[in-house]
Image 1 (cartoon, rainbow, N blue to C red):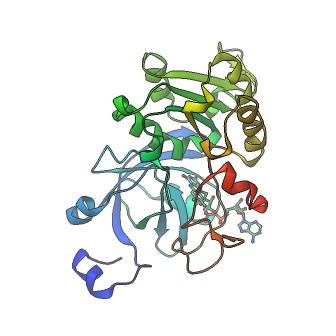
Image 2: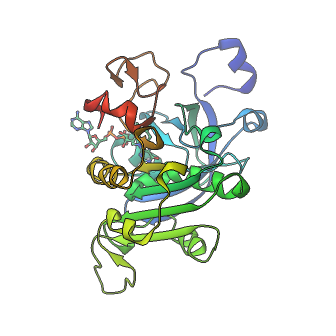
Length: 285
Ligand SMILES: Cc1cc2nc3c(=O)[nH]c(=O)nc-3n(C[C@H](O)[C@H](O)[C@H](O)COP(=O)(O)OP(=O)(O)OC[C@H]3O[C@@H](n4cnc5c(N)ncnc54)[C@H](O)[C@@H]3O)c2cc1C
């Protein structure tokens, strides 16, 4: 890892900056939320991001992987990363303790076009871990509440234990400036009093003004097909449907070609694409 002064001298975009884990909370069996902070205050000051962007996180001796920024740019100082144990790097990151040092570079990707979305209603549709990047957009909109009209959150998981950010969801349910709709595919212990079904079933509980709403979707690949069908049925135009698409990435800066789809690089042209963009690059979904 390099020091702030060395960064300008070396001018190497692959060099990560030194960060520390400030706090961590268990979300589900395999997923943790980490609050992290650059070691050098000047890096903290210099860092800015858009909702929907990601960082390349590195664990020394193990490797790098892309992780979405789960916190809003309106909450400066620390950065939230919600990480599911999926393989080598994410497992090693889970095993780092509080205060451990790791590397981070970024932010990368295009992020949500928030300037275009402002002044409209916002519909957020999340499935499982897809809530992580959408949480950044959600809190951006709530922290700039006056810039958006109606905000609706639809969030579906496999069962009630799989919800991320459970405490926050409870507080959102009690807010009257956002409509929060939750669904579980299976009520595994009879304790769930809400919707049992798929996230698409939640559309029955919301009035949507398609012409004045942007829909931001993130979840498992299978979810996109059915959510998009619903949105098109409700009259959404393809340009108002924003999808966050993941693809194996290496460099994050459009050099290595690992994440290319046709003429696009998902690391720099994405990970946020409109449905209009995505239908011209079918293999991406
Ligand atoms: C833009 C973007 C944002 C993301 N945001 C998040 C986020 O916020 N949170 C999060 O948890 N994840 C996120 N991911 C996903 C995360 O980057 C991947 O899960 C990443 O691969 C984890 O790295 P790893 O080294 O831990 O896993 P890897 O070791 O790369 O393994 C990942 C998966 O690939 C399989 N695999 C590995 N090698 C092979 C092989 N040779 N053949 C077959 N299968 C193999 C593993 O079994 C595992 O299922 C994001 C991905 C992208 C592209």
